[in-house]
Length: 110
Image 1 (cartoon, rainbow, N blue to C red):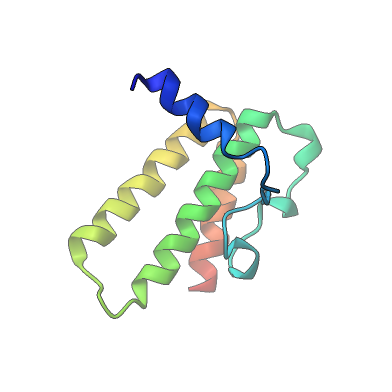
Image 2 (image 1 turned 45 degrees about the vertical axis):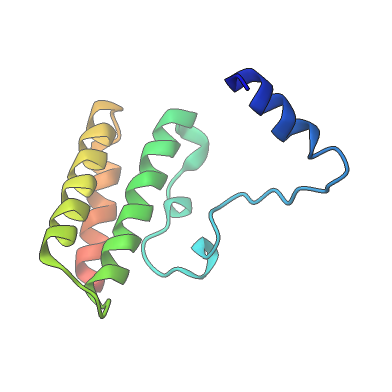
């Protein structure tokens, strides 16, 4: 079965179902931490909003993982590198000051 046949088979099976569409990943609405909504979202492009949301979600992952019973240093290093990468994306998208403020707010909370 080719890839396109598999995609058609998977899509055809959804006709009778009512898929649930979520605006955010499961559990995001209960997560604490800095909120992207606190900023003037209307002035951001969709790409800028995406980068800020990715940074915010990575901050939440870092905060949750710090208290995890199965904490491992190498995993925290990977999360921190991901946060740095998301920060660089924000800087490239000309929203560096907003991203840095988001990180500073997270640092003050912890």
